[in-house]
Length: 272
Image 1 (cartoon, rainbow, N blue to C red):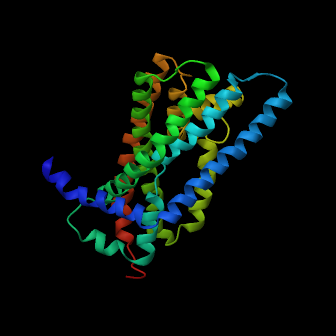
Image 2 (cartoon, rainbow, N blue to C red):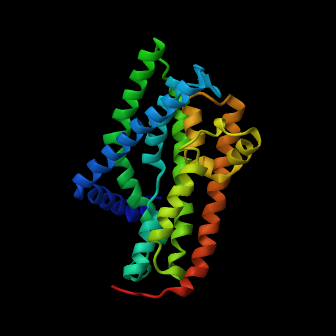
């Protein structure tokens, strides 16, 4: 274990340096996401106003504000650039240098992203989560934060990230065949925003569609951890959802290994 961390921790340090090298880009990306939250706030406020009800499918307006910001915060920790990183290295030829090193291909990307996530967690996630809890205190008149619920939320977030990482790595391996994934990455991101429940909560969908969406693996990306944080699941439901997340992580880990074993035979270096 000591040898394992000694091998891969330098990739984490490289991830931190990479995230801090382009601070203006980091700040602009953050401001853009905050603006998106406020735009969606006014959209949902209009929806509630037109419905003429204070509660809509089990959500009141305060719940929607919390949902919007916690969904965005969860995305900071669970989104993975695996497909983009793998695709770019295949496109520019750097994949050749990575493959000849005596390290696991997946782990190098995973630990590099962990460095970026650690910076995001301390600089964005924690301050904004404190802001969400202050908002809930003002709205409800009492402290609603629960350490136990938060711990379960973070466990779900970890599995959400691992699922996101291996799913994106699987997608990135398509570059071995297609050579360039830029357009496909944009399409994938748009589809996943809907399938993960980050745009429209599954609770707002028809019962049959909601049941299907909650069982699909993409619910693990956002909806499951956010619903745990908001206390929308009972104890039994939380256990079931966490178990389902774990199964999807294992499934996509195994799929990524199988795809890699096939894709590696189709390496074509275009640059480098």
